[in-house]
Structure formats: C-alpha cells, structure tokens
Amino acid sequence: MSSRVVSALAAGIFVVLCAAVPVAAFTHQGRADVPAARVAPLSTADRKALLAAQKLIADLPEALAEVPRAGADVAGIGPSAARATLGGSAELRPLAEAVDGRVPAVTLLEASYRALLDDRPLPDPVALSSALQTLQIVEGDVLPAVRVIALEHGRHVSAGGALDAVERDPATSALGRLLVDWQQVYGVFVLVEQAAAR
Image (cartoon, rainbow, N blue to C red):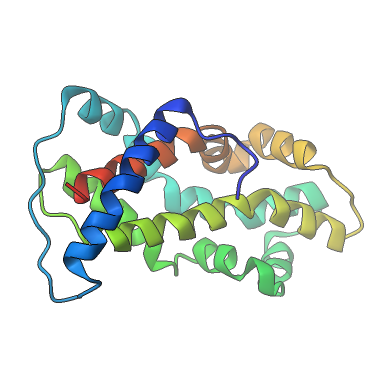
C-alpha cells in the first residue's frame, strides 16, 4: 500500500462505504447473475469531484505503462532491461501485469467511472471493492519497483529519491501525476463504489 495518507474526503467516503458494502454484498450474495442496478443521480459535489479527475483516470493505463521507463532512467539502463527486471520479481507480478495492460481490475474501475458519469448501470459493489484493492496494491508497488530495478543494476535509491526522480522525469509525467494525485484517484473510485452500493 502507498505510504501516502488518504485524504480526509476519501477517508470519509470510505467510512460510509464500509457500512454500505456489507449490505450490498448480503443482498447480492456474490451471485454473478444479479443484474446491475441503475444508480441514484449524483450530487453536484460528487459530479464535480468525478469530472475533476477525468484526465487522471484517462491517463491511468499510460501512467502504469511508464513504470519501466521510470526504473530505467533511475538505473541508467534501457526500458527493456528494466521491464525484464520487473517481470522477474514474483512480488511485483501484479504491477508488471498492469504495466502490460493485463489487469482486469483497472479496466473495470475505468469503465465503472465512465458509467457513473453517464448515469449508466454499475457492476456489483463487491467487484468494485476488490478491483480497487488490486489497484491499491499496484500503485503501492510503483516506487518499490523503481528501487528494485535500480538496485538490480547497482544503484541505491530511497523511496523519496525514487519519487523525486519519477516526478522530475519528463518521460514519466503521467506516472508522476498518478503518484502525486493518488488520493484524488482513490477518492474518485471510492465514490464509484459508494454509488454502486446505493
């Protein structure tokens, strides 16, 4: 999990969600055959928060795909060597799959975000909760991955140094924004979960 503290807004939404999700889970009882229900209209504040995050959400796949470039630039190697190092770590497998665009959780969250903006039905909130947990794991592994890649190639870098390097590297601008604005991304996806649980 990221060392960043989730913003007060996200924390408040999460508390509400913790109460709502068990009810939804009991109602659906984990059945895949339960159709998605239409959600109540968004409040003005919720819609404003969702719209403010549009670029961050749209850039999510690109941001994750920049991880090898970030590691390569810190380590002073090529991106393919960095990607190979990333792929060789069992602990970083979810992140490596996200880098390649092979994590269904990311696709589900993005699609659900768009559906909520368009007032379309949302999937089961339990599925969204699981997807967000997966995304948290992936995001939390970004800086450790940069450090592992650097260490494998003889360079030691702290977590703060890795973050600074990512933020300052023009080739990893989308990844830098994701890390800096992770609280906003997380909060928006919690809003999506909350709407699905209504």
